[in-house]
Length: 101
Image 1 (cartoon, one colour):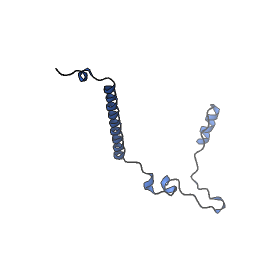
Image 2: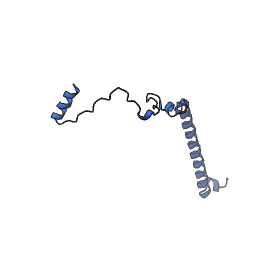
Image 3: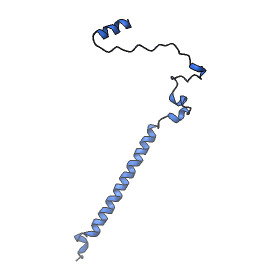
Image 4: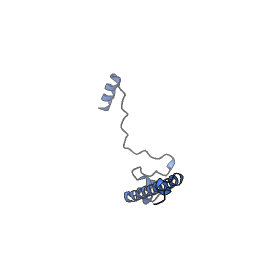
């Protein structure tokens, strides 16, 4: 059936799909050590412990983002306060210059 499809595709000017991979195992040449199965997870193939491949928990990410936002807000508040103090020193308010009656 594959050959018929390939011939029909060629007749219509279409690309021929590659044949499906065979399931037969090819023996290793030279008696080399067989490689590990590709069905194993990458952490097992690389020799790392499985816990080294885990992601950071969502709660830790949210806590970090919250602390970062608090730091940014605190910094902006300090900046605003220093900026307003500098403006007050340069341009004193008129209520500060008048003496009470």
